[in-house]
Length: 331
Image (cartoon, rainbow, N blue to C red; front, top):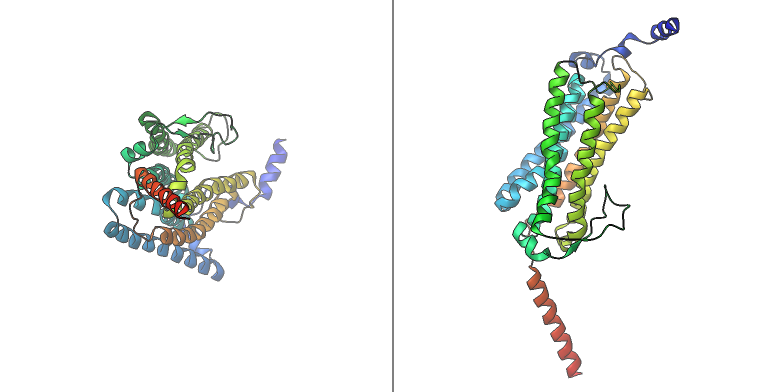
């Protein structure tokens, strides 16, 4: 058995068993096509960042303070991920750091999306005035989309606090666990490729996955029960862009990493299978986030009027009913 392992190792390029190459090694091995590809992707990430900075200036000048920081955070999801992916593409050994930075930023974005929907309805107090006592459907994804038998829950100040807390916990705990993972990594105790039961990654990453699912549930609950009131503000395509960033930055990256660990993505010196999978993931992410940046800029490039209150809606409906009744009486 030992002889077979030695023979197998002898047939594998030594570079396939090494850690990711240095940035200078990546530059040296680039041919004309590779150089053009890297230059184009770098240009895309720079344009994404510049468009985001210009959008920040526009938002700062046009929107009220309460919405400024929230919308700036949400708009920054795609450009930040594209920029971090660009760093990870040029410096393969920094991929874990760039991915963790992107994921920590997006953890805050999840909470900010919930805050945005509440703010668009006038803030927490106006939200409670409109929906207090009304029942909310909680059988939504990703936790309970199959549990249609779950009862509807009345909205209250306590319920709103729990929803906010459910989204906020991910932003806090994700950052804390990322710091812990980095500390363990410097000591050689955290390795994403170590899937043994004694490894720390096999415990930390699934726990982060559970936190992610828990945080997405409150956002989905608020969206499913309030999106009909916010359609004039393009809340559906905005929520779709947020979901798309989530799928691409979390699910797509995880699938590629699993394929790389399994050896499905072949080694290509100086890149090992895992390093090549990470490189492909970074390159795909830059192109995807560039497109999402353009779409997001279009969706948020406007100043919103204040939504009418529920009382105003009722008065308007009553006026229309009265007018219809008078017309019928005249006839």
